[in-house]
Length: 430
Length: 170
Figure 1 (tube, helix red, strand yellow):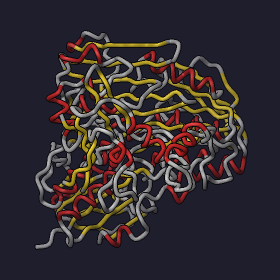
Figure 2: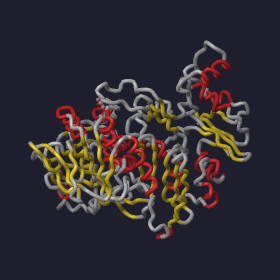
Figure 3: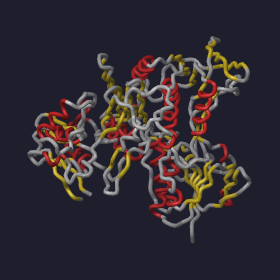
Figure 4: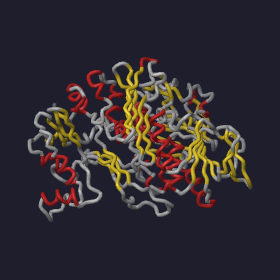
């Protein structure tokens, strides 16, 4: 019996799944359905595209004949309206239906639209897809807006701000939290990034938000902040975050919390229906709870496991790990896992910190008992990945915990057995 | 595939592997026009930006060893790369296509060996669209061991005086 596979979505989770599926099942029919009209492209690169750092042809991450070689039928520019698991059938926006035996939901997230008076006017954008990048770029060319307000100083907000500054605009960032990158950086790390933002000329307002947008002739003219003050603005980018795109699942019986809930096999509560990527709420290894971790790395890993299981394998995903790498004006930061335990001793967490004001280098390691569960590196970040490795493997660090912060921390400090077991692999002989 | 294996008992921490790695990745590195000694001098003194070694020597007390990209079978950097720069060749080597790399440092963040280096060069990226109103001041590249692609033996292995680095067929 041939098994009909259907993948909804066309981002990194979907493509990892497709490739992984094909390693195990060469011939079974696969259909890939995506709202966007494009082949697989790198969403994180759209800010680099906007900045003019990469050309559009660099966004395509697979060759032109990729889907053909994968033997996948593509239905791009089509939206799934409803899933009907009892009939193993999808209903599309154009009235068509698609049957499946095994289904993967890898449809990602959508930008959150905060309720702001007057937001539906010209010159107000979200910035998560290639189409949105095209629209924003066209607006920059046609109307040449000078002053830009970006709402939200998370990763997308900062990358957008940086790109717009590279395009010669005056940028103001507005953030509801008390600091930029509040989800991933602590106060000190955030402050160092803020200095970077100041160096490239970005103005930052924290602990406030946009309460209204005023326009003239159908285009944004000013934003009004929570305290009633207004700032002249020619362009607004809303970047307060993304949330899993799960609306079309209501009534399907597929369990959703903030995202689609999955087992370690990436399977939903409905047999034969899997999910992966930004749409998923899965186990987070450092938070020790189920939550949405919308990162590229996470999506790629989940997709690979889901794809294999679509093909009948029985793989499990080790769990998500929140992480972020951001560099602004030469200030490079990497944050992994739990970075802001507050107060530190709740849940038995302990934070070790080292800050060198002269060089601006900052390191923080968060421990739960004898294991690392979080890290922040600012400045010299080359070896941050070693900490990521220690977090993932849950390695006991008792014997070298007083070395974790030292500037020359490296593999040499790890106990011989660890080097032999993990590092040596096929590598460093002990 | 072949792998570079380090034996820390034989490593004397002389860092010649670093020197030869740097030279091999410099502008004069593979020219046959001048002697090795002259190439080393040129690579260190005359070239700007100066090449950087793709490996590093770790040392603590009497323990030292060289470490470079392991070219992992299950390479986290491949999963993390948002630009398509990090890729695996047919021979199994993991390479970074430096023209595609945008310096996002996602690979640096996930490499459990910490062997990907954030390289910053003051040169415009070739092929960058002219439309950009302002060019980025720095070219950022994830720099790593390329197994001295095209050479029979990587420079670090070839030049290790104590055979602390060797090439092993798996």
